[in-house]
Image 1 (cartoon, protein in one colour):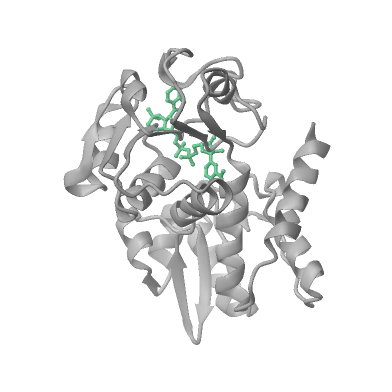
Image 2 (image 1 turned 60 degrees about the horizontal axis):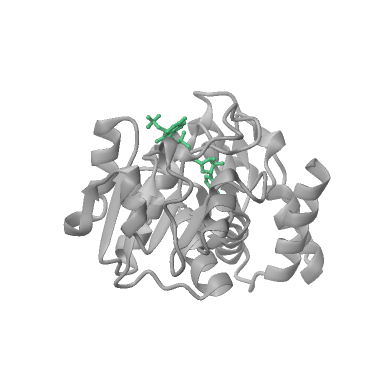
Length: 271
Ligand SMILES: NC(=O)c1ccc[n+]([C@@H]2O[C@H](COP(=O)([O-])OP(=O)(O)OC[C@H]3O[C@@H](n4cnc5c(N)ncnc54)[C@H](OP(=O)(O)O)[C@@H]3O)[C@@H](O)[C@H]2O)c1
């Protein structure tokens, strides 16, 4: 994994647990890479003979420009979280959106097809989620956020089902997704709900997903639960997006339980 703060990434824990679980003689390492050096780090994959990379902040755009070709999703997002070596080519992929869908479907039995969705935030993760929800057949994907041009650009990824929404729209959505860091440990907003959402807005029958995984229960998820909604934290997305990477690099079926257990243990150890 390359990233400015790669040493803090949980990805090595997940992938190395998967290798151990399958008895594979592979290793996954964290390389802290300074802003501006992402393209050079991607080029090094070829020179060093690595099978691939995970890419985190702030290199996702640079990686998209440095690979030989992009998957359709990575091309639409202009961002890459996974580099895979296929023959002589480096291919840029994005597993966040599908990993999010896997977490909803596999872990919670929720299918977004035909559902009204509201995404809070308009950054990289929000864009991946908007595109994935539209691809999964959501009836509507509204985006609410604090920077209007980014909100409009994220909503446009859902085509004719995308629109600019407001936090108040959470009352009518089947699925509400927090894709801002509000509520995350270290965000400075640990006690807040994103976009000043009314904590009493939710009700039974709704699913509220927070992409934040530390803490495991954010103020948003606590509010959702106390209103009778289903609360989903970001651990499932973290595990499933990594599982998709694992399959791409190794061709092996990812050991989801080992990866999930390793993620939960590492998060508990972080306190
Ligand atoms: N579970 C997982 O596997 C997973 C994967 C990816 C990301 N995440 C989590 O998702 C969150 C977003 O990540 P990202 O990569 O998308 O970050 P990002 O690209 O920096 O985007 C952050 C978004 O949140 C908005 N935002 C930040 N602070 C806000 C505030 N106080 N009020 C309202 N909006 C605020 C930003 O608004 P502006 O546009 O106005 O700046 C931006 O739209 C992070 O907490 C990250 O840890 C989880």
